[in-house]
Length: 136
Image (cartoon, rainbow, N blue to C red; front, side):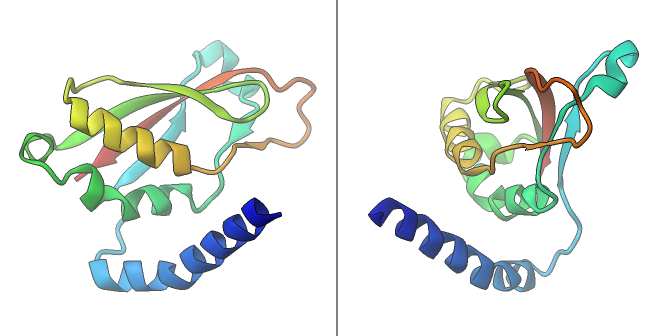
């Protein structure tokens, strides 16, 4: 019960502070991109999607992700997100960086991402891979 109340409190706080984050940054242009990684033959087989606000949420973490000297040198980070058959993120792999601190910060941000939503009308909901591109 305490955990549920805690989650509700955090969600309410995030909703209340969301307009402040957009106003404080002064930049309404989205920098994060999420797309499904599938073969062209299987393009219609995508069965999961992230919520509409996920990219905005990742953008709000951009200063946290790129806060060190090493990560300041990187223009963009490409991450492969593995989603299991229940819609939960089961793992990730950074494609273009070996920075340990960046990986730890991304791990923190990825754990905060919402669970994927099923695309209506699909017969099976299997594992899927998404490519996340985060630009400075």
